Amino acid sequence: MSYNKPLPRLDTLNKPFWSAAKEGKLLLQHCPACGDTRFPPGPVCPKCLAGDQDWVESSGKGTLESWIDMHRAYWDGFKDDLPYRVCLVRLEEGPVMVSNLVDKTENLRMGAPVKVVFDAVTEDVTLPKFTLA
Amino acid sequence: MFDVNELKDKIAVIGVGNTKYGNFPETDDYGLAAQAFRNAVNDCGIDKNQIDGMLVSRIPYYARMGEVLGINPRWTVTLPGHGRMSGMGIIEAASAIASGLCNYAVLLYANIGLSRRVNYGGDESPGTWDPWGFTSPGAAHAMAFRRHMEMYGTTTRQLAEVSVAIRYHACLNPDAVMRNPITIEDHESARFITAPLRLLDYCLINDGAVCLILTSKERAKDFKKPPVMISGFGGQDTYSQSSIANFDMDFWYPAISAAGNQAYQMAGVTHKDVNALMCYDNFSPTVLFSLEGLGFCGQGESGSYVEDGALALGGRLPVNTDGGHLSNSYMQGWALNVEAVRQLRGECGARQIPDCEVVQYVQSTPCTRSIIYTRG
Image (cartoon, rainbow over all chains, first blue to last red; front, top):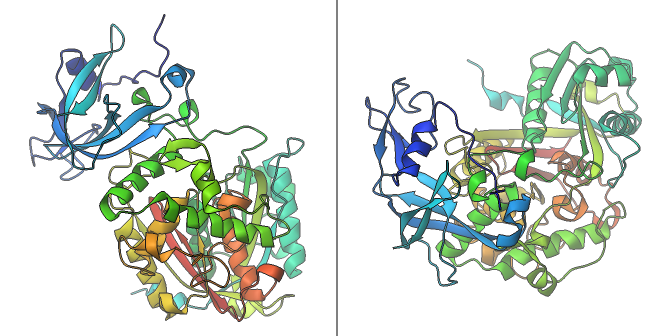
């Protein structure tokens, strides 16, 4: 069956992130001028406005900041997954990401350590997700 | 050079109007806005040709709106359909009048979300996190409320107090959409939408329109009803992490606090003087965040503050006496500002707050705004 969940809209800014994810790497946009690190990427550094931004690899480790269980499918592709779990993770490097927590347990606490896992959902797209560390 | 505090009590709301709220596929944004406009014009008795300023939100095309209403203002502003635009629009219009850009400003808002089945999520509002299934403002508020539960021990039964009190008000409002009372148990047994949030934590999407007419204090004396003064306002935006839409790690606490303090300082009042709070209740947790940011209780203490019906008429702080977004309609803050005016005029019948003198509006969103209204 073909994958029928929304896929990332690739553009020149975010393409390196998605290419790296395919290779099992979690990248964060980084400012060589001031060291600011972020996701999603932007055209300039929001701290110092430098234009040339590069990428650094995240350790993939972070902490659980929050989580919810989606009981409504806004896309048909999620219907069979209901309820599915979305999490908010603060990476060791600072940036906060939304992702999926693959664990089904009800025994969750804010601040729990998590680490990235990679889910190759299509031939072209691999989604970074998280699991309890 | 310019001190915004000088605008205290200089601008008045002279006319308010709204449509019924419901499913009206036979009309559209312009038709609904025209009804609300006619009601506001009749409310204050203004000659519509006096109106020389127009601000529209969630109206497709300002010029068509002017054509429909037969007005040609010298000041026009269009704001997008985001809910947070109501507080922003009222402050913009007040500033335009104060600076002489117009004398009589009409503010128009229309929503056709029910008849056109607007979902506020999925492909209608594409975002960075769609591949992970994270979408809709409700999901963002659920994410925030889960943090509040974890950080402060707030419970969903406490959250239920918000929905229950506001529903009680809707039951006192003959024009409200949801008029069956609910209990904490009803809230707790409603179906999950984005756990920990349930159906009764969500606002009601309807068709409808709202209109306000503003002018200067001096000109306000010429109309049918006593003017309601804009005594203070304040604002603070929070755009960092905007890719996580409708979410803030700190529950907008710094922004609400800043906007609230500006408004209190300008009006020369404190939260203790506020007889009623009109609080942007797109989702019930927003009310908790607002109470903390404005200083009605300490940070993290809103759960216990709202217990035992504190937000209901007769309680320590009546909130959203018209039924708000949760039990009347999601008119994106506009109808709450109209309710503030009606309370200060003493027009609210069974839901009237006795001796109502100070009403505060607050929208705790990426564009946080607060407005303090008083009797003229």
